[in-house]
Image (cartoon, rainbow, N blue to C red; front, side):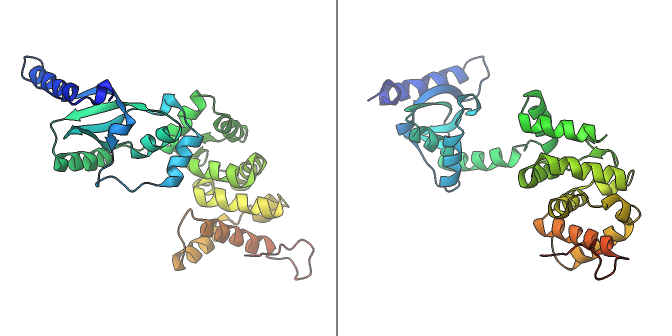
Length: 278
């Protein structure tokens, strides 16, 4: 039996914490400690294990980003309050011990409430903060996106046409179509609808990117320069019937509206007409 799992040491640890908290110092009943993973047990209030999530942690494992597991020392066991997937990934990678925040003096019900409140109060990092951190860490994708955005006289942020708040849309375009399509998309939007705030929102970004992906830049600005208001209206009407803003359906609906107005005035046999396919 390892030293950390010796019942005598667990008892000693609990007594030391009680003595410390009864003194003049005010402290929390928790410490950082290396704990054997074999002694860390799951709890019923935890989320069910997602094998795909465990695999993702294993494949992209980085100790610097691991953090500490949160466990509750109760009845001689370390009950996992937060970090079940990380603990499973560590076991899969051959780790025997993990750095843990050890909570003491909690009942099972208190642990469950702690788990609920902890997840309720977690502040999810914003897309903007994530992008900014990516630039600071010199993440290649973030830096390329920022370069393309600035090259087309836009900036990432909020505040009108030239500030793009839909950062996730920029990543989606790169992931689905590549950096060149993002560059062409921003170029077309700037040249065609300069100053129209809605033209740099998520629906327009994704819809124009879909257009570029399907048809290229073919006379886009010349044929659609004064059409944004009616295109937006037609798109909004189609979304009112069904679909959700920002979804794959919405980008296709916006692209379809672009194609319909691109074809207006062109004869049915014109070689310039674009063919729409779902």
